[in-house]
Amino acid sequence: NKNNQSYGGKIGYEYYFGPTHHVKFNLGQNDYAAKLDSYGYYNQSYSIAYTNSFKFINYSLSRSINNNEYDKADTFVKSDTIRDDEIITDTLSLFGNFDNLIKSEKMSYLRNIYYNISYSDIKSESNIINYDYEKELFKFGLTKRIVF
Image 1: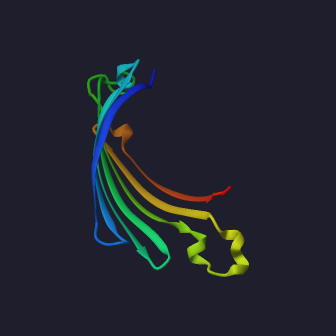
Image 2: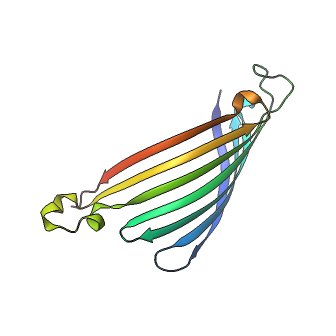
Image 3: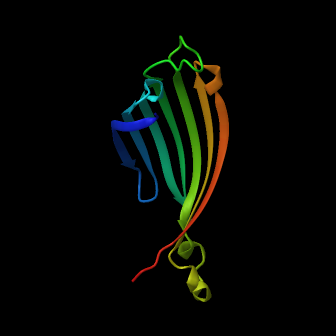
């Protein structure tokens, strides 16, 4: 009964200030169709991100704002109000590869291993109080590339 089909698009612009830092802007729109209309919604998103390198560490600061307008009221929660959400996400990410961090030949086994660490603060405000929330996300990822 949830989102079965989605249609949408995104357009953006990226500006480089130099070889190590740039700003990215994105605008997006999506329409999510569902068997049960109270799960279908229209989404508009806006985002801005700044990326830079400091010595051997890359970092990114971003903010995204999503506005979700639902197709129909959810009679189970509140019968006369169509849900409308605004979700703001602020993220700090650190990423790169261990090759740049450790230059020792003794640690050559760390080649082609990439890391990604991020922290996100998410705040959702809705016209229906049940859907207001705040949360924090911490993510850590490692990727090992194998070259043949």
